Length: 189
Image (cartoon, rainbow, N blue to C red; front, side, top):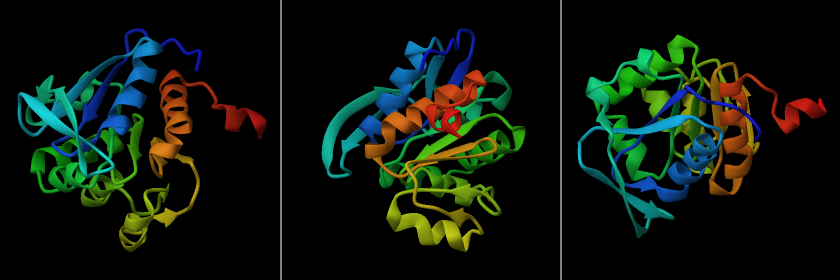
């Protein structure tokens, strides 16, 4: 992932219950590549992280409220998973509008594990090829998505992955898409 993302700003939209590694590892990859990352949420202060949905895993400081955020201020959006996190986001009108507007902007939007639940609520999954954690694939199909079982899927500006096991490929795809360079998989084909 030798990309230069200096000057690029990435919004990470998350709420309490976020799966720690799904926020932390892509954020570290973006930071190493030179991007500036900011955690947006539906409340200020801190959000509680989880490990495997069940165990407490510390907190993340919220940098701003999604209600006050503008798509124009960011170059990409990251939607980490965990089951509680996207479940909270998909019932928040500001979070759903932000995700919809981001996808419609054409800028990269990356969602992992249960993160695509918010894509469904935003009405942007139909006609797209996506992957996710197995338990929400029926939800994606019902929303009109073509669902595949791959470590990472890039469909235009949407980047999706299945689970924490796919974080290396997911992180590489986010950095590559934001930098406008091919991933290792794209270079092979």
